[in-house]
View: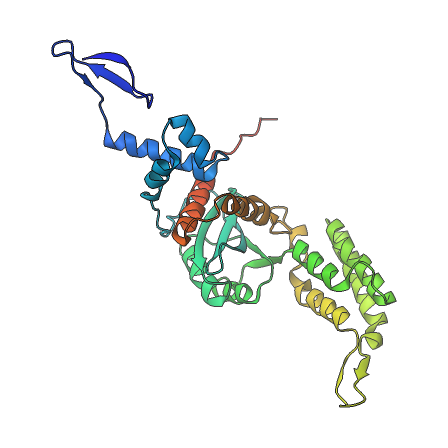
Length: 318
């Protein structure tokens, strides 16, 4: 057999020198591997199905049929060996109306350790994932947005582990309740304090912020207790409910708000998951809108597996 050019699909054609017959050899393992790579390029890349089909000189329906035959079920993720205890960032995002994704991400090794598809974020969803993590890792610290079910599950599985609250979520939710232009002097002062949270980096900054908040709370304690009355029904309620909600949010999070100043390995936000996983996933799902629920899970699984397999850039020795 000798090489005799290429086919229209750019595969090698062979020709027998005796019988003058052409032949094209195929290996099933190579074909499957190439199809997997092609599907990854379509699902995780920026090329559309039409552009890939035009490059391969096939119809896009043929390519879609090939891709639909490959389905990845979201199985449990095998553990990976780590050099040191992980700092786990826990966060979730919505995949569809029926499905949400919860992720445990290690900021030290910069990779997702485990993930799961659930109906919604709650204790029954987070607890099995944390139990699975506890059988392989003992985290150095946990960072989360303070979702009630997540807090309850983490306290149940890791009662002695530090739990850092996400500063970005506290600032974002507080500013949404306070609005851009608070109408009260107490609201204006509290808005300045909330915005100063983003600039808190050291022990002295944290102590100064705690003292400032305690002073604000003492000065406006009677103001926050004011109530309004309905003259017709006599029903009473707190007049400044949004201010009280922001104060309650900060008071509940205050014990776990500044743990990051003692350990530089602990991040003070969950941005590594929200910006590094949730945002690219939302873009991928929007690009592949119209796929089925199972295909969405396969897309998310491929994306997270790719994040685990990627090689991180090495640092130059100083």
